[in-house]
Image 1: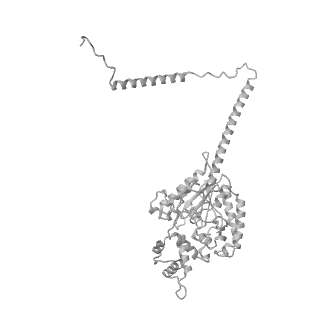
Image 2: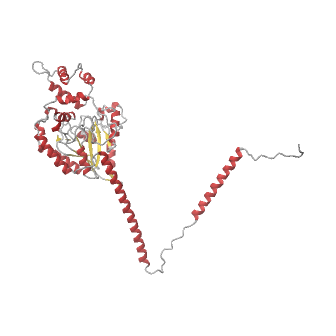
Image 3: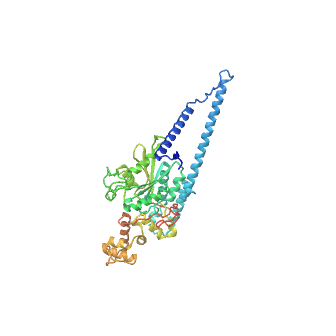
Length: 453
């Protein structure tokens, strides 16, 4: 081996030293970048010398420059407003198409058409509803005039729906009339009687209906005193069963918060008029009493209690209008007994006026499980509607002379239990969202004829 040979040193270094060097380099680069930004910021922009005093017509030149600047700003503002208007128009058009109400008639045409259709319904002698209520065309016109007044005066219209059958109690013609009245009128859907349906079903309907309009769940107060009606501050979607089954009102806080938003316009609170419309006996007057916390409107389980428009002052910003219940009876001429049965199931006609109460009971048996009816009335198995009513009549003691079962009286009892919620029933929303024109289980006929109670 050569004497004096020396081994070369390795260029490798520990990782700790390498990481330290890289960190120092990053900090140095960051410092240089910060200093450069500071220098650029410190550089002053060249000052606009403006118009020299020695220039002839100096004031005129400045005035023309300011005018050109104002015109440019105005042009940009108009262009921005036009773009916003086009975007809003396209959104409204798409939303109306989604709702299935793109072809909207005005309220006057709707009124004329409805009254003309009611005249034809009144002339039909084969309706299963009593003639004394259906042939009074003058009352029908008066009710529609009251409804028209509510639409004209209201800024916000609340359409009340029965939570057991929301699509069956929606009035497509009413929504058309409201949208035809102009963009200044707002429509809100209110799902009443949510204590009669399961919580999951209520949440599904809220999710479905919110695709079209703002929707609020509500339970009206059922207390009998005149003043100081109970109201719970609990959220109706999270309230327990004890609160839902109580007589207190639920959902009033959410509804008042929504109405409070409509009273604000550019940070300025103004007064609004709120109209409440819907089918008979869906709880319109009870909702007003619950919001006012006193019995300011007459209520009852029979349809047709409210005869004329009523105005109630809720507070200094909100006035409520109670409207008589309206019913767009669908294809009564074509459906005959089936159309009258649907009206009876929605409690839109008085049960005492039905000449054939058995047909609606057939519809109830089709919708409710046989086992539920057997447990409710404590009767044995049955194979037909006649057998069911005969067993029920014997059970309740509704007999004619000679011990013959009074099936008509038993049928009216079943209808009363249906309308009061004693017979549990609810519908499910469609699995896939579609516009309101789609038929559902209890809404399987087109809007042709109208009947008002």
